[in-house]
Image 1 (cartoon, rainbow, N blue to C red):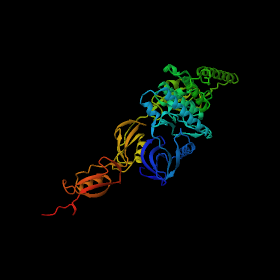
Image 2 (image 1 turned 60 degrees about the vertical axis):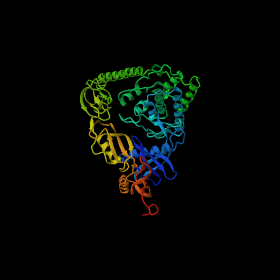
Image 3 (image 1 turned 60 degrees about the horizontal axis):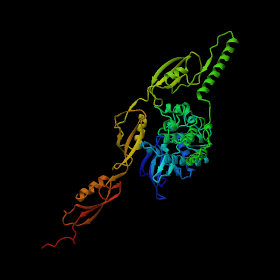
Length: 524
């Protein structure tokens, strides 16, 4: 991939990032003579029409957004079956990297970050585009301190009716910042971005996300049903107005949240001035109360229906019941929802469902079954283990990705390394080949960047120097000079200097100690 030119314009350089859907490379825009970032759809996904469609939709969505607070998209297209997006190259770091330093962010700085994100979302929402994946990893802070929202990787146009980004237990978006409606597979809208931003604001001002757990599934459950721990219970020094804003943004019912980014932004500006916010936290019945009322109503309905059946017929009728969905629950929780069934338990590995939780049930959920019938529950033993393949080093990044994917592993990081190998060749893998990992784990790859260091040639003979450079992948140019204090035929100087990093195929000039007629001494 390195040094490839897309559509005669974008010369691909080293990889600077990788995601679930695409790899990102630094590139040179040959026409405009500027550095850009090029996102290229992963080759192992390019054969899937749904992924290609989603990738193109990202380009269309992000390409319509021109705002200083959003990473710009310059171009998109296809070349040789590869889909790509050309984006603004941002020099800076992500908010996630800042949080991982475990240093507290000053309140004023945290509030400024939230305000700038809200301004960007207010703009994107006005254009009919929601982000769907607001999280620290998608917030860039430039070297000048500007905040930019990036990666509309799972954005959808607001008029894409019914679009949801989750299935039963495959959550798109980071679980700690996922809105309840996304966690349950319902359609998301601008208020979903408000909720995710509320999670981010909670973390910046409190020091941890609002919900934490051992697995993404358990965290998603908390977003849907667990009560929010008030920010002031963890950080008593938090401003009461900011706490109110967080609580409104994190309401589980979208109708109780800020209805758009501009409303939340208005309250943020009031809080910055020390004025009370205008939005009130809606008082709603507790989930427990609603569940109890619902259960009583359901029980009454079933009781009346049962009495009607038994009093209107002389024959005994066994009622059919809709089988509840217990996938993702623990065994005890699942059995509590299936009191009138004969439960059979089996175990199997599963890469999607956490260990010791229900991975499947048979008959399928929502099936009408007779009370007392048999239900088979499969409990996940976890993803299982896999061995890092042996045939990785020396192959291209594209081939290695396929090998790792087939083995159940992913690439967590790629590190460009100076080498005379073909650009994109894998030089090393960590953990090493043969290591035992959990299915779904990531490995770190060192890949050839296409650059090599110029060796030290001073003092070598001309033949040795030329051989060394040729083997390293350089072109050789020679010049002549004379130094009577040095032996003839050795290298007196070189350009570029030893240790310089140059692209494979570039030229290195060596100056060879040569005696000419002008420098030769007359014979006495």
